[in-house]
Length: 143
Image (tube, rainbow, N blue to C red; front, side, top):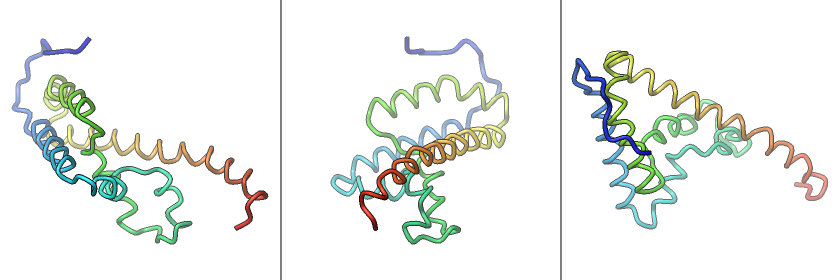
């Protein structure tokens, strides 16, 4: 069931929520305009857990900003029309109430913290299976 509205009125204007929705839509439209360059854009700015976890093994510096930028930029990337539509509908319906409860800065901090935690969790979750896989393949194909 897809919600179309909520019954809790907001007491403040949801500036941050509206800005997040606008930013997501504009970035999605930019994604659509990239054509064949979309894949490179997503690899540069999307959250690719293997790249983050094994950054130094690929020759990157631990404190290189390019390693950490995707944690923020990937918040605004979507994989298709229904992906962004679903996310923006829920953000539109429920985000204003959360922003009303937490305040503008608190809401931005809350959203950013949740997304950052989930992306870090996903990045470190992938480390275990990949490590075991590489350990098993090592005797077969020495580097």
